[in-house]
Image (cartoon, rainbow, N blue to C red; front, side, top):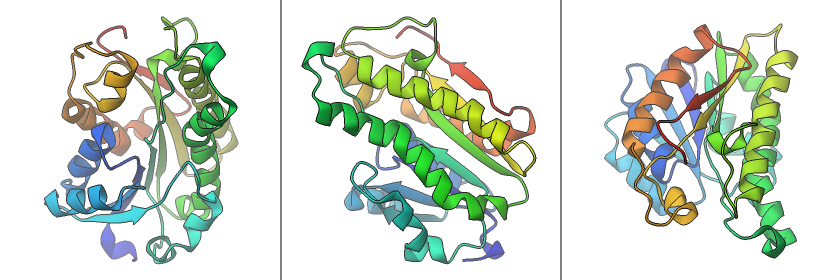
Length: 237
């Protein structure tokens, strides 16, 4: 893969929900190629088949994989650069604090914090080769200090809070480079994850609607923002 692919975008958690819809909409943009990352091979293939634009499936388990190995994946090895990296994958634990196991806590942090941290490290050489690279962290409104918090989400919300701080740290570290880093702290969206966190709650936005916002921000947000945690919410939760 080379510059003939145009703007190259990698998004994690692309097998369902916001990631799925964002990947579809990004692939339909003129001159883009989307690398869709998830562990569900069947869902990724369905995504690729549904898309009218180029989507390349990349099967990778963010909870259990050695993150450094992604750079050796045949898809990644052929890239000449990477323009946009969207850390969308998320893992939710919804249990009372005293009942959360060490394994559940580590799983939540592996997907929500370690994966964005270590995947960015692994893909940094490709990001540096882009003209203007943009790293987008998909966080939660619950990960912002002072926002309303809910019982059962201590593991999830604290991990998303760590992702917000990572955004600010990386923006400073990369301030003299071509890379901008921003974070979208999303509110309620109609997804399977929200249904697990708040059974019966009817969110005001669909995954496709939020996917449209993420698409526009990933493509254009680095022109206006760097190191920002931006709330994107119509309601609480």
